[in-house]
Structure formats: C-alpha cells, structure tokens
Length: 217
Image (tube, rainbow, N blue to C red):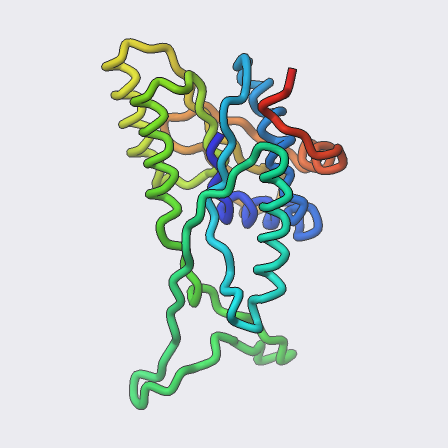
C-alpha cells in the first residue's frame, strides 16, 4: 500500500474532521483494506509525505506532531518516504512587499489563511517510482493507492502495461474517505477499483491498538 500522505490526511479532515483525521491509523487501514481486496498478505506500507519546516517557529508544532506520528508508525511496519515542501511568498506587484496570506471577513473580521504558500513537491514522483519499481520486480500482485488524486491515472495505465508484458495477474485499487456532506467529491484514481472508507470505519480502526499489517493473519 502506498499512501499519498497529505492527500489522505486532508481528505479525511474534510470528511471526518480534524480530531479524526489526525489519528492517521495507516497501519490498521492497511490491514483492513488488504482484507477487503482478499490479498493474502501485506508486503509493504509506505507513506509518502513532506514534513513542515522545523526551523520555522510557526510550523514547529506541526513538524513535531507529524514526525512523532510517523516515527511511531515506523515501529509498526509503516515506513516514511520523504517528499518536501516548496514555499512561495505573496508579494505586492508594485513594490514587492511580502503580503500576509490572510483574508479578513468584511462582516465579522474573522481571518482566513489563503492556501498556496506551501506546496508539496516530489510526492507524486516518489509514489510513481515506488509503484513502478515494485511492478517491474514483480514484488506485488495487489496495489492499493491511498489517494484520490486523478493525476495518478497515467501511472495506473503504465502499471497495467508492465503487468501485461509480464503476463501477470494483478489488482489495482485506490482507497479514499467518503461522507454524506454536500459538495464533497469522492472519486477513485482512474483505472483502479474503489475502496471507500467511511467515518465509522475510520473511527473503529483509530480506536484499536497499533499493529504491524505485515503480520496480519
């Protein structure tokens, strides 16, 4: 199973709320989703994810939270593959003064941070490299992408071509949170079989002790 870390976390937060999403039970999800695919065993679980800037005081709490969570998951068979963040400032077009990425509501003055200053780089390429490397080495027959990023559509087509050339049986899945909230788009990666994760599923798994999915029986 390959986890698009921020994609999954943000989707879970959007559907289930922060308190649920921050549990991030990737180890238990891997075991549960593998059972749904009827695969015999979990070979590998990797989370591809950038960490916030540990040297920025504003991001230090977030950095330590995620590093601690990923280190703990590592003790249970989930490895962390690093991506990185690229930071972009928002500047005035006239004087190039750096602007705060906050918009205040004209009615109540509530501040709202603007998205876009921090963009993850390298995560999609890393996931593609891991998936294709495993395909060429014939190290798996079932792959689960924990993501709903449609950009992985071409990767899926290439994986199918590799498996076709090797005359191998395979299954390709994408797993993602789903909810009943209006306006939320839930979709599988093009070319994959869908595995939907409900709030009840997530809460049940998050309440269980951590486990190494590779040892699941």
